[in-house]
Amino acid sequence: MKDKVFLDTNVIVYAHDRSSGEKHAVAKAIMEYLWETSKGVTSVQVLQEFFVCVTQKIKKPLVLKNARAILEYLSSWDVVVNDKYITLKAIDLQERYRFSFWDSLVIQAAIQSQSRLLFSEDLRSGQVIKSLKIIEVNPMCCPKCQAEMRIIAFITDYAVVDRIIRHLKLTFMAERPPPPRMAYQEFLMDSETGADYLS
Image (cartoon, rainbow, N blue to C red; front, side, top):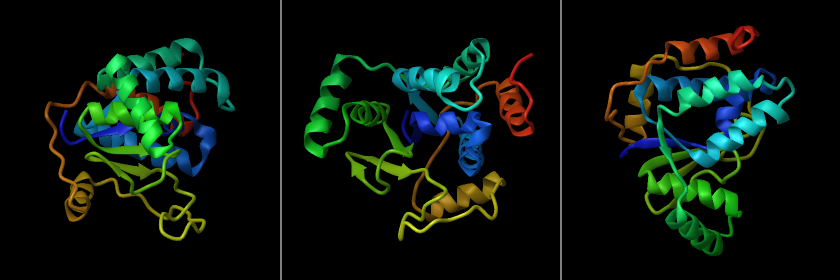
């Protein structure tokens, strides 16, 4: 699972929550890129949290069958199962870095999967824990000065995105072909147009 990108719950929720404004657009772009490049990694914990959030906590909750269908597609990614080893290592992370226990589980799952990056809104950007770099996904806040920002453009050309990643010295290589993504792409497109995910 080398050179993978681990997504925390909030990024996946924003990708499916039309009411989250610019966060929806950024998260959707991240998800599309990870589907295209087969680099996405998550954990059972993240999938469980996603299900609860999109069926109970967002402004327009998804019906259960739609949320379940999204989980099925996300399950084609590399999914880390939090076992006793990961749980004990998460406690060590909590003690050393003072993260919450739940954030420590996410971080340890990302480390266990050998992901290079962890995208999250809840963790401070730029931290490196073992070989994992945390990237804060908050389009409303400048990572350097914390000033409010707004999105003026998206780069959707994957060749350009790859050049930027190489420039930042973040090397990635897809280890397997992407999963069938047509239906998942329809979920993302429908969320943009305001349509229901499934009829």
